[in-house]
Image 1 (cartoon, rainbow, N blue to C red):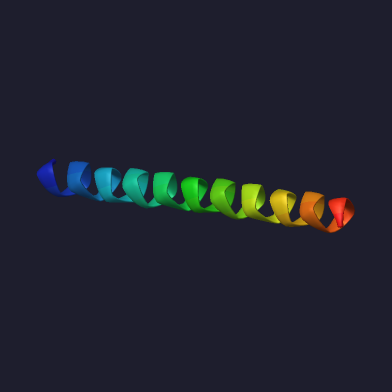
Image 2 (image 1 turned 180 degrees about the vertical axis):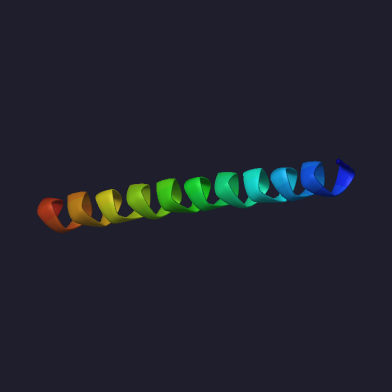
Length: 39
């Protein structure tokens, strides 16, 4: 049971990190687009 729980925790952490990274990249791209439109 402990091994399964550990695997689930690792998967959850990796998934959370992946989502956070995607959000950061999305915000970065949106900012770049607005900067190009502004210039």
